[in-house]
Length: 464
Image (cartoon, rainbow, N blue to C red):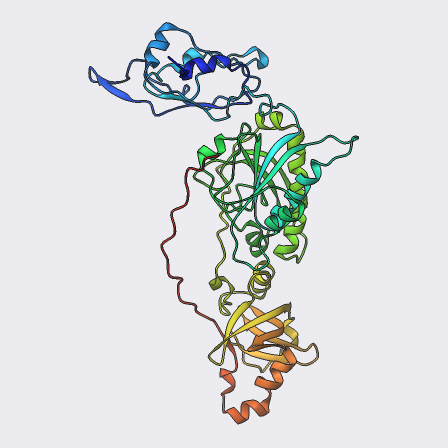
């Protein structure tokens, strides 16, 4: 045989398996006597195909001559007989192997004999995936947790960072922090070697991770998500929380699953009230700290937390897609004052709200509430009509079911409401330009649909 070692013989060296998940896949079926059977083995039942969970599994080679003969000539990633010792229950590997003679048995949590990667308690070796300010808080607390004093338990051992390439002059917050603190940094999709990491952490990363990559980590990859899943699945949960006026939000730590965002089982979840009149950036600051603390709490007892995960309910699923420039265009006849103000609180940090003035786009800033009694009774009340309130120095704009106030605008340059009135709404200006009074109003800006450009095919199988 020379230096070649058969895969099944190498498995004899395995003595311990970290909390693992075994599943059966790629089994072939053949027709025999009008029926469908597994080739060389009994058919696989639904029970046999389910995920098997547990801790402290003992791995050994299945030495049954019949099974070994049937598996001859087929590659198997891992062949294990898993005996679950909790409450005296056991999982007979013979039953699991039924129907897999022409297939494979795959261990979702990697079986490792190397003691450096088969930890059952902290400190954990962590690979962190993130980009923005929300992710930065998680990275900071992970970095702090590996520099604990002698009186505190060290939760994180080795730490490396993966972030996205950026064209911004200032770069991304996570990448900047890693560079400043000397934390090893990788630019996606090049993530370096991850053979010596126990667990991955994702926060505001925005990329699907392949199953092969998830399998590289014995404890899988955890995601810190700022919502009460399954509500607000997607890339913009904070924006949609404020936009829809939710009174309660939260943070969910879940396990990553391939191919779809935010569908994995829940490891830990906590609810928090939404501060009144807060912006999405203010809410991000609150939830990022809460999420970071929850992540450390999970890491302190990671194996037990992973044994007690809960699948997400099928009811109450909502989605939080990315916002576009069209979202910032105010629809005066359709949106109420409350909805417009919430829209600014939700997306104002990224893009100001927009309208059309005298045929040109105008950006509207600093929205406030306007009581209806301040509006002159004989003033025209059609969507977009404008009235200047000199006492409070704001521009009142008519919308659905009321009026909304604006303190400043940007038309070529930023100006206050008073300056805008003197330059464009003063009776002298209206008289000299011969603009009818009904035309002195804001219109809805209609942006052309964004043209779809072919995207580069993303890397689906990331190796380490």
